[in-house]
Each structure stands twice: as structure tokens, then as C-alpha cells.
Image (cartoon, helix red, strand yellow):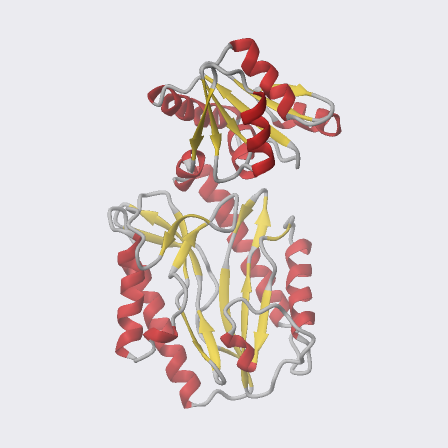
Amino acid sequence: MSASAFESRRLALQRRMAGAKLDALLVSHSANVRYLSGFTGSNGLVLMLVDRAILFTDPRYKIQASSEVDCRVQVVRGPLLPHVLAVIKRLRARRLGFENNRVSFEAYQFLKEHLPLKTALDPVAGWVEEQRMIKSDDEIDHIRRSVDLNSAAFERAVTRLRPDMRESELAAELDYRMRRLGAEGPAFETIVASGPRTAWPHARPSSDKLRGNALVLVDMGANLDGYASDMTRMLFVGRPGARVKRTYGAVLEAQLAAIDAVRAGVTAESVDRAARRVLRSHKLDRAFVHSTGHGLGLEIHEPPRLGKKDKVTLQAGMAITVEPGVYLEGFAGIRIEDTVVVTSNGCRVLTPTSKDLRVI
């Protein structure tokens, strides 16, 4: 990411600060710190001021920060907050914003107790996350490369699948293939479930062997250069019966309908509604127990959420997942998920992997 990209992001945030009459804004969430400064370390705070930004970190990250960060860096010993407050006091800031949905109660209490009496502490939620919803061309390219790597890892791992393989073995093979292809690691804990356990939307891989004549659900994502991808595909070990084919066809129809509904200017809930309408026609809508999708980027789950009551208007440049699913206890669960980018007249599906039910 170019230095000018980080500067542009900070300028946009400073304009919003000016509109809200904030003298300073403390950014503490690690993904937001990275978005504004480029810093990838585990201990950093960004103090946004009206005319500049300061990254605070500790001596472990002195060399790293000097390489990654394009704004001023202040390396300090001990807890970071007292040093942030020293700057606030020196500048006599009257209003300090903070990410109230990201700050611990302990940190909030410290700020409240140690700020000057004339400095107001103003809660600010979601400002940086709202900026992050619209991806630049460079960010979309990062996500696309993460998606491509993830799909390549899936293809390589599936060739090694054996009917007597354990769920945990397949998950480990998927993670291994990601890293071999250059990923920093999985974007989340890889999900592998077989048989009736596919009806658990977030099943963790177990030591159970893949069942014969049963579905296998694989939900995986890679983290590449900080950006996440997300994909779910279904396998079948053996020969799928009529009910499996019928249910799979219904979920695929719902997923394609939701993708067709994605475009700039529509609401997130309308995309969700498109998927549910199809599943209702198959009498499967009550088995769809989660939202149709979510944003992704520096985090695997970001705004916007594509759920029943989410009224966010989609905009060109948003990167989202489309992942309807049905979960039938005692039978199976089926989910199909792609990563897509919203465009002015539709969307671009980034996931290259076939959505056919793969028979092993």
C-alpha cells in the first residue's frame, strides 16, 4: 500500500473530525491502526490530530514501525496510554474522541480518570470501519489475490482427500496448502464437517473420519498481505441421493439469486431477501439461520452485514460474501459461499472455484 493511500485515509478521517469538532481521536483497534498507518505490530495506538497523526508503540517494534509507517512514530516504554495523554495535555485538546466499541473498560476508566478536567471524552463508534467498507482498487486487488490463493489451496488439498481421512486432517491439509502458496495463514479457523455435523454452521474440525455416502462442508479463507478471503464449498463422499441433490440445488439457486441482487444502490436486506425468497419456495427458509453475507477486508468480518434488517445501502467497491445455507438436524447442512465486489451495475464474483457439488 502506498504512503499516499494512508495519508488520504487520514485526511478523510480528519475532515470528519473537523465536522464533529473533535481536537483529537484515539484509534486503538488493530485493524483500524493498520488501515490508517500501515503498522502491523500487535501493540500500537494512533492519535489523530487536526493536522497530523502519531503512532505510539513500544521498543520491540521500533525498526518495524520505521519501515511500515509513514506518519510520526513515538516509541515509548511501558503502557502506551499515559504517553498519549501527555500529548493531549500538552496540546490542551478540548474534545478527545475514542472508539467506544473497541476500548476496554479498564482503558476507558484510565482515560476518564487522567484526562484534564477541561477535556471531554467523546464516544465515537465505527468511523474508521465505515471508511474501510469502500475498498480502493489496490485493496480489491489484494482481496482478489487472497481469493485466488485460497481457491488454489482448496484444489490442491482436495486431490489428497481420502474417504478414511479425519476432519482435522483435511483442515490441516487446507491450512498447509495455504501457507505453501504464500499465505500468512488462514483468515479464520478452517471449518471441515462431515455427515450430520454439516448442520452445525460453525462446526470445528473433529477427529471423526469423513463419513461414507455423506456431505463434507469446507469453509476456508486465506490471509494474504493482511487481506482476507472466504469461501464455502460442498463435497460428497460416495454417490449423492435425490434429497442431497434437491437440497443442494435449492441452496445454489438461492445463492445465485442473491448474487444477482447485488449492485450499488440496493440495501443489504434486499440481497438477503432474495436468497430467502428462493429458499421459501423450496420450504427451506426456516432452515436458513444466519445472514446472507458480510463484508471482509483487513478482517474476516467487517461491515456491511447482509441480514434481514440491515438497511445499509451497498456501494461500488464494497467487498462482501454471499453465503446462504440450510441446516437440517439429523440430515445435513449445505452452504455455498463466494467473495464478490459490488459494482455500479451488479457485482464481480472473485471466487473462481466451481460451485458444482464435487463427488469424491
